[in-house]
Length: 248
Image 1 (spheres, helix red, strand yellow):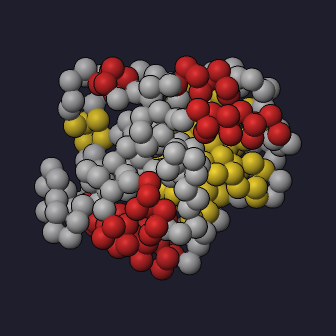
Image 2: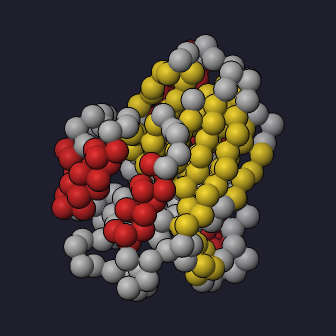
Image 3: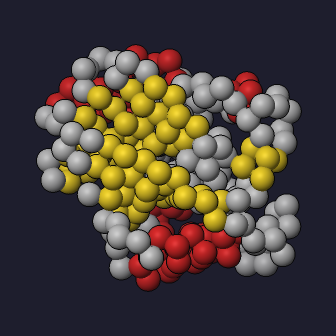
């Protein structure tokens, strides 16, 4: 089966631009590009809104996504409002302390969707994650989350915006021998880190990409990208496809 992963849309309200980038057109161009290739499911990896969760933005995005006529899944990022998100996308479960996390089983494969919108996960979500992994019957599990659960060697993001409880999450992930393929956003870079039974893949943003070498914030380039993830019984492949971003 084939998943497409897009993240960090940062869509503004109508007529709202940042860094002179037409973020709505970036989103539309990405949807047009993925329609040209075969896939089964689309995952949106958080930060759907430019600064903070906005109902008008979510409604506009939902209209575009529904036109694809393909199943899609959403997880929140730190620029989202989980309550508003769950109200506009009514298939998203709001659990515990207003978090959105859930499990999906497809062809006997397990997919976990986590919520790191507050820069960390609640104790309740950690318990749920531990239980889901313990009960998993497949040989590997695919996890989607906004923040990477480890430092990624990107100084600006590692020092200022990393997941606060990443060590606890890694401890939970290491409790089972199942291999975990983790797909994230948040860092606005393309980067992968491999551990013993964990692979972490950060997908570039639909906004801009951050300079991976500098400690202070700096934009590297304005190309945008989506990730194509192909899953077979014994193999996972991932390939990032870049598009030119839109300036106003």
